[in-house]
Length: 251
Ligand SMILES: [Zn+2]
Image (tube, rainbow, N blue to C red; front, side, top):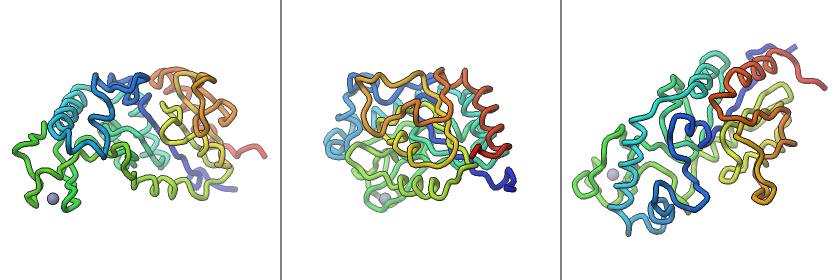
C-alpha cells in the first residue's frame, strides 16, 4: 500500500489563475495585449527593431504587477507545495505564486521581474522597476541585448524540457491539475490524454467547439471539471485533490 507521501501532485496553470488578481489575460482574441500588437512587443524577430516600445511595454507590465496581489488560488497552490509537495508549473510570467509563498515555480514562459542579457546570458532581478533602454546595461556592459526574461513568440522555451521531466513516470495514484488555461499555447489537453493519473480541470468553461484545436482541453480528458473562476473553485478543488491523494485510484 503506497502512502500519501509517495503520490505526486502536478499543477499546470495559465492566465485564468492570475486574471482573478486583476492581471490582463495575455492572449486576447483580437491579437492585442493592453492595446499593443503582440507581434510588436513579443516577437523574437522584431523586438530589437522595437527596442524602446518593447521595454516601455514590459515596464508597464511590471508596474501593473506591483499593483496586484496573489488571490486565494495562488495561496492554495503555495500551500499544496508546502504540505503536499506539489510541483507548480505555470505559463504565467508574474510572481504571484512566489508572493503567495511558493518557493519553487517552473515558469514555462519566463519571469517578468527579470532581465536577460543575450550577450552573456546573465539574468538580473529588477523587481518591478522600469528598465531604461537608453541607460541601463547588463553587468557585462551590454545594452542592446538586454531583453525582458520572457519567452517571445518564435523563441525556444527551454523550460518545456523541465516540464516534460516533471511529468515523466506518473502513475494511477498521482494527481494532475490544470487551472486557467485552455491548452491553446501549451497543449495541456494532449498532455492530459497521455497521463495515467487522475486529472481535474478548472477553467471558466468548455472551449467553444468552433475554436477547439488538437492539444486543447476537453471535459472528456479529465475525471472532474470545475467550470468557474479560479478563486471560486478553491475549496472544491482542495477537497478533490486531498481526497484523491488519500485514497487509491479505482482500478
Ligand atoms: Zn551581459
